[in-house]
Length: 522
Image (cartoon, rainbow, N blue to C red; front, side):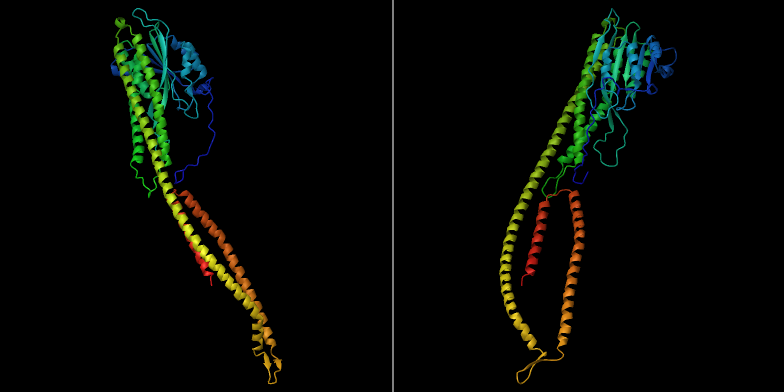
């Protein structure tokens, strides 16, 4: 990027991302890279709470169909499957075959595949909206018994990426990373078991789930199916508040830089292109937030509605449904507040962008006004110079006519002058009787005059050729210096007085030309 703020962008075709219908880019291709983990939770015994919390959760790797069938037949109160991902742009660390076996073994609904397509290998961020909340009642609620059901949803969460700020300015540097997470839950009333599938969960969410399940087992209470969802959603708001606060700070800095700048004609006000890039990046992040929070609001509202519909009322054992519904409503209220803050941020970003456009339009108008005045002054100076050059031309024409007359007269009298000069010299003698004679040593005149004439002619030719060679050697040097000056001028910022400087140079050139013309006048 040059000092003027312009950027030379190499236009490269953006690769078109194809729809991954067969999930080739979603799942890893090698079984050695597969890393499906299952967390099971043991029942509490008579040991202390601290000792029990350390060995409550047991994590096991799942390698094939036999392992899945083995754990599907067990009656653990809760099973949590975790699918990891090396980075947000990499494939899921599970093969498509193993995932298909997981779906078949636990009889998941086919809609689960809709939540897997956003994950996987990609060259750029191509989607922000998450798949909508899905719910299916497999069995109706009985008397005092919660019926089997399954649900799935996804959401976005943000984490610190611990990146280092580059030494030079960068428009795409961000210390936050927005990631996605998919959740599938299945409650089997026949085994009173909750199966949870987490796709790329955050460490905070996974640890809070383990703590919730272990503490529930220690207290020997019934684990409610919607307790897990409420815990997962509660891990989002803290980082989102910090993320929005950082966006507000960045936007305020960019707005102050434009609002508090001095704008006048003498100093050229320029908005660096890097600041414009950062403003565009911030505005894109704000627009993404609006979609993210809208999808999250839709998910939380459906969770609250399903929690209320699945509550058994007076027959519910250790019923926490009213508390969970209230907590979900509070989280929904927090999401609505974030949506309003996002809308305000978007309006601020638009106002800042409009202010930049207005300032640039004002500066362009001032520059055009100043350039118009400079062009008018240059026109007046050109008229004066043309009138002076016309007078000098007429005078030179008259002087040339006078010189022509003198030259003609000189040519007429030149032969007579030459003859008179020869006869008046000592080479010709006239005696008393009027006879003319030439002295015997007159040949010296020819011997001296002819070599001297030849020497004068040769010296003139030598001086003329030497002068022409010297001028030809100066031309490349002057051309290189002019090109360097032009390059330096093109790489420097465009100032308001460019046309005025050009007019001054043109005026100096005309004055020099006039002085040269005056020197040639007699």
